[in-house]
Length: 245
Ligand SMILES: [Mg+2]
Image (cartoon, rainbow, N blue to C red; front, side, top):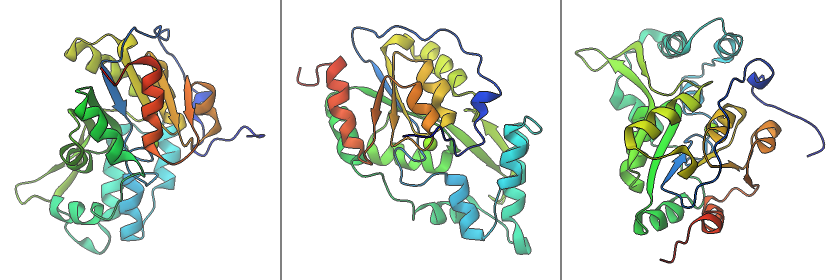
């Protein structure tokens, strides 16, 4: 990479207040996966739905990065855009749309091996929880931390959400997970692909940049996978944790 490049209006230049990165632990007890661009082969599950409705959220992305709106308003604006032509949007419809998102190459093989070796796994995504829950079920992922869209009595999206993983502060989700599971952050490995994952990578023992969407994340990673193949994570894990035991 010759040129410093960030696809996402790099928030790094605006805000990065992190605790000190933990040292690498003697073993890996938990692996955290970003979802969009890591477990699934799409840049953003939100954008995937916008593409379906022929809408876009560039304006709200910009406002969010600039700190003009928070995560809740971001969700509200997205859902409002989807309501073009006044159609009511249910979880069933979202599930049908999101079915067309495919897994990242190597994701199934990677997660199968980790499941067999009894290594705990979690999704930490600012993406849509409905999708994260399905993936977790299909790939035997133990825990899901993502953002939920709330529905009314008729199962229609209200525009409100539950933000479990703020897009700009994935480190907060890591500290919650570490505390609730009793796993020290130094024993956690995390995988992410964009500049929004820098706080995720810096808050754990081993940070892995996967198929980096932005150059900036590579600077903050302990390990980098340049090929779009998640099974390449396995040899990296083996450097820190014996998978043959
Ligand atoms: Mg991502």
